[in-house]
Image (cartoon, rainbow, N blue to C red; front, side, top):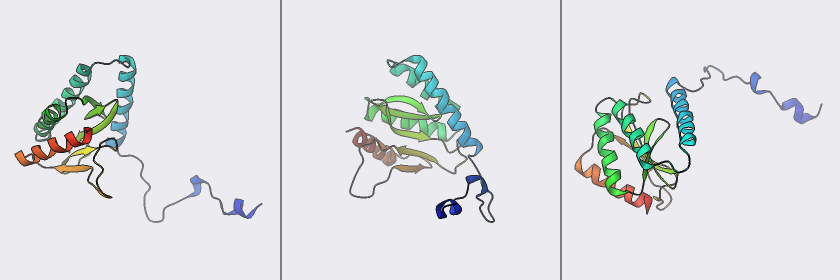
Length: 161
C-alpha cells in the first residue's frame, strides 16, 4: 500500500472522543421538510406565481406563531411592505421571508421555531448591506420600539437598493 492509503481512514471509523456526535435537531429537520414542501409548491405554481400566493403563505405562517412573536412578525411584515414594496413575500424554511427577483433578501424567524430566547430578523447575502469589512446580517428581537421599526425600515430600503 502507498503511504497515503495507510493514513486515510473511512468516515465510519472516525470518532469524537468524549462527545456524542449529533445530527440535525428535530426543529432543523422540520425546517428542511418545510423547505422541500415550499419548493414543491413553487414548482406546482410555476414561474409566474402571483405575489398574492406568497402573501397568503406568509400570513398563514405568522398566524401560527405564538405571542409575542406573532405581533412582531406582523409589524415586520407591515414595515417591509411599506419600505420595499418591490419585495415579494414568500416562505423560506417555514419562515416569513421577502425576495427580490426570486432571491430571499430578508426573513423573520420566530423564537419558538428553534426554541431560541429571542426572535431574529436577518438578511441573506443577496441584501445590499455591504459596508466596510464587517456588518451585521441578523438582529435579535425581544420587542419592537418605534426606533427599532425605523431602523428595520431603513435597513430594508438599503438592502434592496
